[in-house]
Length: 50
Image (cartoon, rainbow, N blue to C red; front, side):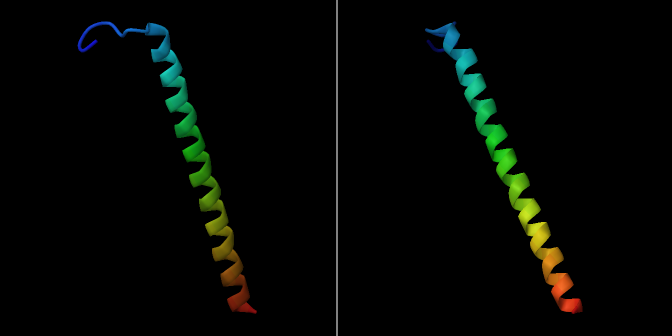
């Protein structure tokens, strides 16, 4: 239904929750990758000093 009310209004909330879930997982993955990269940099700089 273009421009009108959706065929299944209950599905809109379900889709919004699904999108939020996907965004949360992506954010967590980015945060975990940044943490690993940061740890690698710290480890590399510590090894250089030795």
